[in-house]
Structures are given as C-alpha cells and as structure tokens.
Amino acid sequence: MIDPTLLAVLRGVPVAMLVVDQKARIVSANETAEALLGPIPAERPFVTVLRHPEVNAALEGVLEGRERARLNVTLGAADRRVFCEVTVTPLEARPLHGAIISIEDRSRDEETEQMRRDFVANVSHELRTPLTALMGFIETLRGPARNDPAARDRFLDIMEREAGRMNRLVADLLSLSRVEQDERRRPAQRIELAAILRGEVATLAPAAAAAGVELKLLGADDNVMIPGDADQLVQVIRNLIENAVKYGAAGGIVTVMLRRLPHEPVLRGPAWSITVADRGEGIEPQHLPRLTERFYRVDTHRSREKGGTGLGLAIVKHIVSRHRGRLRIESERGEGSRFTIILPETIGRT
Image (cartoon, rainbow, N blue to C red; front, side):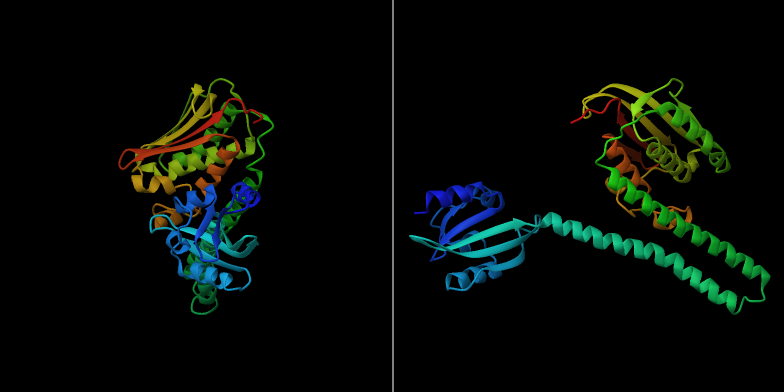
C-alpha cells in the first residue's frame, strides 16, 4: 500500500505522475495523469497504460537498478499529439519499491520554438528575395549595362523599389517587436478617437483618389474619448484603410464608420467600433482565420507587388489586444471585406 504522505504529495503535484511497483504495475496515479492518459486503475500493468517503447524500456531499466532516466517523446493519437518530457525515477519508500513516472507537457514550448524557427525562416526569405535582385542588378550595371543609360535607369528604379520593400519590412518588424513588448501594459492616456479617424481619412484621401478609390467617413462628427495609445491606434487605422484601398480598389469606395455600442457582451460594457469596409473582390473563407498570422498572404505575388510585408494585420491584432479590444473580419468572395475593431469605452484594473 502506498504511504499516505506520498499519496498526498502525488495528488498535489500539477504534473502528471504515476507510481508503479517492482513488477511495473500501477500503484497510484494523480488526476493530471488521468486527464492526459485516461482512467488508470490500480494493479494495471504500466505497459497497458502508456504504450511507448522508449518509455517502457526506460522504466524497465530503472526497475533493474539503473539511475533516473529522462527522455522526450510524443504521445497521443494522430489527431492530438502531445510533446512531453518523461522522467522515470527509482522509488524506495518501504515497503514499496518501484518507480515514479512523471510526464510534463512541453507542447507549448515546442510550439513556441517552432514559431521562432518559422519566423526566422520567413524573415530570411523575405529579405533574401530583394537582396538577390539588388545583387543581380548591381552586377549587371557593372558589366553589360555599364554604358546603357536606358537599362541603367530601369534597373535603378527596380533597385529603389526593392530597397524600399526591405526598409518597410524592417520597419514593420521593429514595430511588431515594440507592440509585443507593450501588449501587457494597458494604455494609460485618454485619446480623442473621432479626431484620429478624421485625421487619417484626410491624410490618406489623396493616395486613395490616385488609386481610383473614394474614402467615406461616417459617425465621426462628435468627440469620442476612450483610453488608448494614439500612435498605435493611428497605425491600426492607417493599416486597415491602406489595405482596403490596395485590395478593394475594384469597388471604388472604402467606407470608414465609427459607431457606439451601448453594451458589448464580450467586453462586458460600452464600446466603440471602427469598421473599414470595401467593395472589392473579397476573401475566400478558408483564408479568414489566418489573416493575422505573420507573413500570411492570400495572394503572395499580388501582395508583394503592392508593397505588403505580411505583418500589418499581425501588428493590428497585437495593438487591439493591448487595448483589450476585439478584431472581427468578415468577407465573402465578390462581396468585399469588412474589418472591425471594437475598443472598450473604459478599461478596468482587472
């Protein structure tokens, strides 16, 4: 029988733990272990609870007198894989002799590491493409096009465009880094939201007109005071309007609407919504959940042609999160797109 003190410790540990006897039969398991592996009745052979060759080999070695074993394994079925660190430790608590198996879920650590690897790979790819173009044009200008003024001017224009693309990417990377650092700090100032909207629409109207798009602003006549970071909200609004102009230009009109919500259920109080809507081609539904991922593009070639870095909506998502708000994206193919941010009228201390 397992010692009551050891049993109490086992149940109080937040990590999945199982105790087996010298014959590798289950003596006890805590609730965390059963949440991970399912019901674990006593006296059951451990090999029937966790059918993993490496773990069972490590347990066999410990029961034969070897020292503690630690290994990284992937557990679960095909539809739910869990990356775990398993530790098998000898147990000598008279009259019980056996082993303790602890299983720590490291899936989040593995996902974080995979995100880091993907991020580095994406940044490297995004920088390598314009750098390769620049190096190729420099080589051409030093060689075959050295005395060709028309080719030189054309290549310099392309080089300027590619350099600008790299500069935008670096600027967005720095901006994303700053936003992520600030995300847990709630905005301390109160800002005039309607004035920000009026200013951004006025600033972007000439560029929109040049692209054949009319900007319409609705509901921003009165003063609207909310807690917020003015610079970050300018960045959000500018990004959404610029995207609507770039990718919804076929519709000819982009509408920016400010509206008060007396009670927003998720935010549990009054809020203000800003909707940027276009009448363009729209976005197919399978892309919508991934639009705020870093470097995700619906149309990679078209996005790069228009100077997109693939980071704009990721920055928007983090800024909205810092303001304890919500981002909603609605679109149908051929019906245009609506990007809505909902910001609380007040932000509590909790």
